[in-house]
Length: 557
Image 1 (cartoon, rainbow, N blue to C red):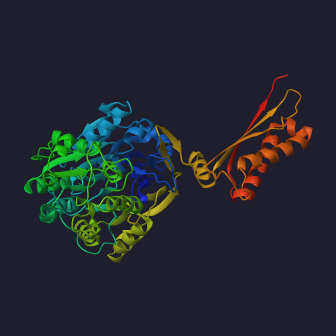
Image 2: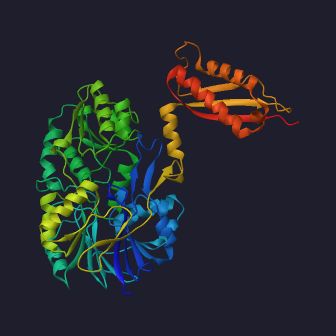
Image 3: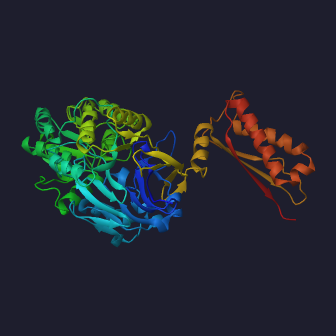
């Protein structure tokens, strides 16, 4: 049986976020494996209430732990590195990344009490990392966070280029520029590029991408035009944007104050690793509060409407003693990620109530994307001339459109979503098998499975409310007639204009007085009967069937 080369997405293919990809080479079912990225996505109140983080289920990786030679992290965005500290102990392989990414990854490992010496720091190409049958190079590529890297993965079956997240930016302000000469070299070496595994986020954006450097003048003009306090929010990881905003503040004769732990951490880490230089000196919130309002610019976390971030707290009234007033200006220097619109609009309205002028950047005046648009994706196709194209980092419609573009150029292309193993050994990719996949939730401080029922029960309680019913049975198996009912998340009174709990208690009392001995003696039957009556009364009174918890207490003889 011949060796084969495989690609397996476990997260990030058919969705944006939660990236986790696997490559393997060897005998079918015995391939040596490498993992690329371990990221997270975030829960929402509609589908995952109370869930902090969501990540790819590692069951398949754990079952094949002895075959994994390495984990490679392309860059330090949460959707690529955020699950490292949470999932590493289930995989246990050496971690490989570059310096800035490694500094942030180390913090995640330390937070979970995991060994930081598992993290190996590497220089970019031409330096190489040997991992089983794979030889891997980190290739600098521009993105909205410093030190992003594509991976050149050389295998006995040919070369793979895994782009990671990228854009074609020759002037990224902070970090490394896209180098077309370098990428021409990569395309020409050996037998060329066999497989291009490519970012698909902006495949529907038909205009060429814009450089980060193009924002300097618009942002400076904006800040200089504002009469009072200016606040801007963007992604904390977008160090280049933070520098552009801070430079604009200084040029407009304003002091800079960073609000939010994540933002300060990113700036400090970028400075400590040498990525960020000449960042203006910042002041504390206390110092900012003492200055004239036209002499301050705040840069805050929370561009996506996160409830606990600095932006949301400012919108609710104050943050660390700082308050926005009528005539102040708030700028969203970020794109609203699909799914976050409600949270952002809520904050914009809260600012409006305060009399704060809100500037929405989704028209692109004060923001540029960190992902390649369609013309740039096509330019990369033309530059690398891959034999195969596998789109990643996108929802299904993004992947499918990207495949259409590849096929139109004669590139053998395939849609591969989470759990679909692709054989890329020959000249064309094809599905070879399905792998069980799913999601793991971080619920507070505990990891739970998506199918464990916790979130399902939480949603049911949110939709229908809950009822706690207590029934006592004496030592002679005779129930006390007075059941006790407590309702949560339900109206106090129903159609009869009497307390619903009282109505349920009355019905239960009648049932308990006439219940047959066989039912009373069987906890399960008695519990089912109590739940049924509780739901029936609630439905009649308020039109809801609550989640019912029945407690049957039996007195010892």
